[in-house]
Length: 254
Image (cartoon, rainbow, N blue to C red; front, side, top):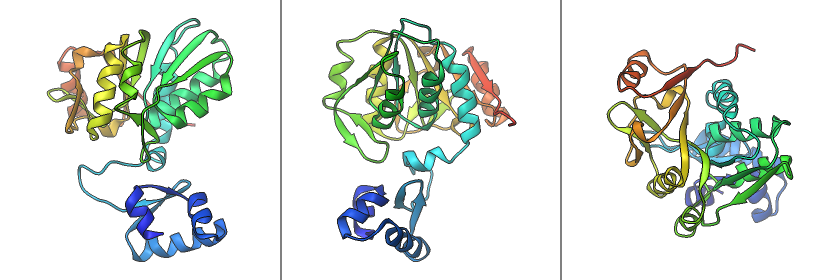
């Protein structure tokens, strides 16, 4: 189990159960032991290596547990931008997953086409078919984010033009712009921005002031930034000082 987790970056309980011919209960028990002794981290639905440091990329499941209420609040504000008949691009990530759930809840939406490179995003949006038409890009699977990237994912965005793109990221900074840890995903996010008439950033407050290797774009490439209000005051002030439209979204108190 430890070897598979280290090799794949994230492994589901069901996969381990099937691979080793044991029950889910046994797998969970073994993962509890490994978490205490072998440096793995239990996350929703499975396990991943425990890695520390500023360049550590959270798994999709791990990110779901972080600032969840704030992400839902961001998603509700951003979903209000979508109108019937629009075509939208929805990026991968936990905040974009929250957005997908809000789009499903919007029963007033119809004839909306959603293009995504996220397998979990597509499965969530399936709940609103046929009000929403869901198009998945294709491409090479990144298990950590359940995302599809180059080479084939980029081809999709050479042939479509969307009204609006919702872009996730790992960093939003006044000088560094909008960035991502993973280079293949950063490249595809740039393609999404180019393929859309308008693009907005969805980022919880922990992303404010962070700068990573993969440059997605400058702040001027985006119509607005929906940023969690947990962002530190200095980073938020610096972002607004650039002239960018930055909306600080408070998490719901409920």
